[in-house]
Amino acid sequence: MKKVVIPVAGLGTRFLPATKAIPKEMITLVDQPLIQYVVCEAICAGFTDIILVTHSSKNAIENHFDHNFELMTTLEKKNKKALIEVVDNILPSDANIISIRQPEALGLGHAILCAEPIIGDDDFAVILPDVILGNDTCDLSKMVQAFQTSRKSQIMVEPVAAEEVHKYGIVDCQGVEFSAGESVNMVGMVEKPKNEDAPSNLSITGRYVLDNRILGILHTTPKGAGGEVQLTDAIATLMKEKGAQAYQLESTSYDCGDKLGYLKATVEFAMKHPELGSDFKEWLATEIK
Image (cartoon, rainbow, N blue to C red; front, side, top):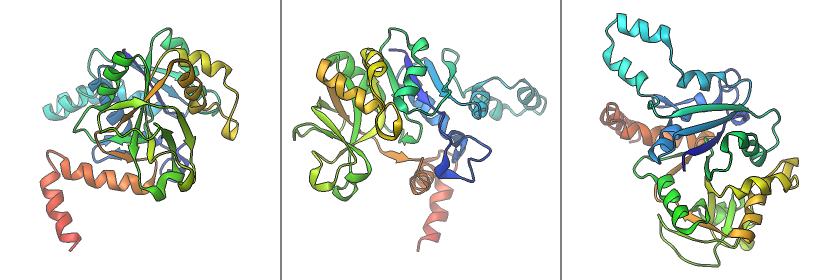
């Protein structure tokens, strides 16, 4: 499995005015834009074809992964070897960034269909770039392994507090208990249920490894909530036809499409930064007394 779809066509309205002139995916988390974290995650999991489903306002994302001759020439003239290495290593030589436009905002399912000419007959993964994972494990790689073993699509989930379930899509695994890093069969999904109606406290976390059959299902999936083609509706159909599994996240997730989630991620990643971490933690300790 080599292809991963990353939808980046959204306008980032939750982060206005910061996203008025720059894509939300280019907002930095310490010293890297958000999109670089998810691309690195995909590469860690063995994906080489990174398909960006994009919008006319998102050229900065493509430019970030492109070669900047003027910048490199300037750095070379100034003998900035460390910076040259950082810029050169943004994307490995065997990775491909492929962009395709989503002409209308018609939902995640529609965004995936926009990538169909590139996906072809291959199974593929989907990463939602608002969700950044801690880099202590490579959960996406484990999802791919689980898919290859079971031949069932994998949907990443994580436990949330009972009072939070109404904010998320919640999966039904018939009460089967399983540990982080493991997968179990799903029998259903409920979008933003009331606490008393929720089949579990396992929320969908923005990572999918999907059987190619999902593309055919998306073509016949009627528009759902908000008049959009919903991926969850197509997964529900796929679940009945071929089965699907919930994979429980082993790492930590941060919702960087939310201001508070982004701030939490900034603190966590700053504390773990190889160059800044020690000084930042020392400063932070003086501020929170």
